[in-house]
Structure formats: C-alpha cells, structure tokens
Length: 114
Image 1 (cartoon, rainbow, N blue to C red):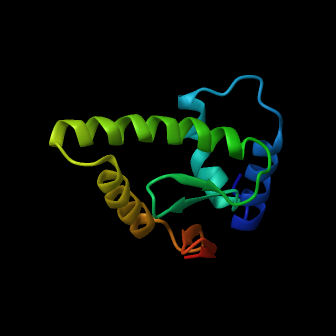
Image 2 (cartoon, rainbow, N blue to C red):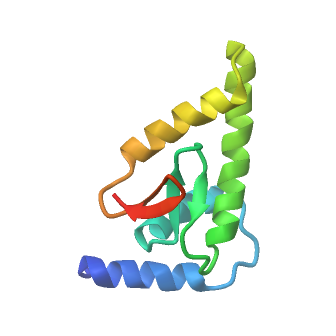
C-alpha cells in the first residue's frame, strides 16, 4: 500500500518518537533519512548533524552519527596532514549542498528549509 508523502512523513515521525530501547550506529543511520524528512535533524556547515526538533530519538541519532563522523574526519585529517577543522568545513559544505530540498540546513546559526 502506498501512502501520500505527508502521511508517510507523519508515520515516520511517529515511529521516531517512540522511545528507543537501544540505538546503535547502524540503527541511527537507518533512522536518519526519516528524521531528516520529519524535520527533526538537519545538516550544518561544520560537518555535523544538528537537532532541529528534539523529538523522539533525534538527539541520540545525531550524537551517534556525529561521533562516527568526527572519528572519520580525524582519520582523514591525520592521514592527509591537515587540520580537523578543515575537514569538518569541507564535509559541511558538501553535506549542505547534498541536502534535499525541503530539509533543514543551518546557516549562520539559523535553521532554514533548503
């Protein structure tokens, strides 16, 4: 059965608002698209996810994914002999560019729909 996009977003948002027994990185990665679609999470220019609306598991999803991103950014910085902040800035630029229209990005400290 296919639902209209607004109903799908609502259902996904409701699923994300249920308390988590245990969320790991794999679960966070799986939940990320729905959380972005529901307007709970967005991309930031610093290369990390930000919490737009702290509903459901949004904060935990962001924490787990940001932890993994930071480890990867640090690995890339060390491997290439550059500063962590430079990797973060480049990743943030790419993430904002790749964000789908209608999802949130944080520019100059303000959340906006792209």
